[in-house]
Length: 321
Ligand SMILES: Nc1nc2c(ncn2[C@@H]2O[C@H](COP(=O)(O)OP(=O)(O)OP(=O)(O)O)[C@@H](O)[C@H]2O)c(=O)[nH]1
Ligand SMILES: [Mg+2]
Image 1 (cartoon, rainbow, N blue to C red):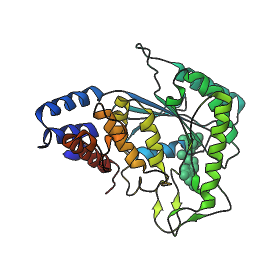
Image 2: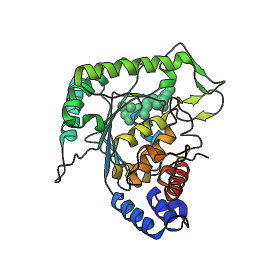
Image 3: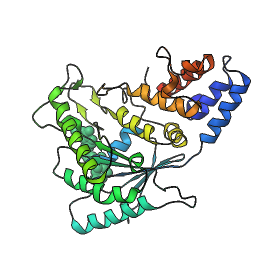
Image 4: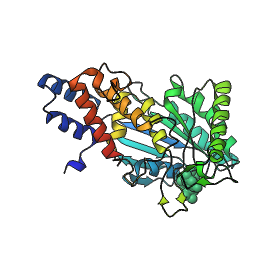
């Protein structure tokens, strides 16, 4: 029964049953959580053909989304609760096809609802750093997406460089340490740095592309599981406003064992996600209000308890110990 609750429902339940949170704080937090709930979140996933757009969606959300394919537009609509992910067909190099697609993407990104809020909260552009269609994806960002995003474009765009495992053809994965060997890491990261520089120079976009691998088979018998998608999730969470963050985390995430475990370790991305969620839920908090490393502890005993509950629920959702 408890497992069927969303992140925010479970958290609200935990808070209401905590002996360390006083009644006033309970009602303030419940009210705030209630305000954050039920916000629609629309994510558009675009990029050249075969780069791993659909694989990226599955790596983040597992198989928990309802899938509906529209044969006319070629778009697959993935949905669960208040989240909708629009999986666009890939650019395939056919001039007419790609032009139509560009127009469709540009028009959809420019649309607003009756309150003036954009219909699409976030565009995720997936690229394959080892493919020749990389430039096609780059032009899509600069010529179509950047002009259509308007103000606050940095907050509505995430660029992912997928297939980090095969980005450098001649070097292999370091299976001994279960991490990319230095050479494997350098290739996609250099491409990410180059794309970042070019986007800033050409379009004024300050975006750091995230290198990850949505789906690859480990030849050491450990099967398929993603690499560094926690970094991608962290960037999505960090860019979204508070209510949309909750919708994202309320959606069932990939529950496959160790799906969120492997990362480039440049930062503790789980900790970063915890901090963002704590700041959104506990008003007045910054940087997770950590004290002695403990989430929320700077806000006192109650903050520490809420930090503990947020952390526990997030770890459950990511299937981390
Ligand atoms: N090695 C490796 N292969 C991957 C990775 N992610 C996806 N693939 C493979 O790339 C191929 C294309 O993946 P899709 O997810 O269908 O790509 P897509 O962008 O949705 O493709 P279209 O919808 O046809 O444009 C599949 O065979 C995937 O298994 C990855 O991280 N590493
Ligand atoms: Mg696809």
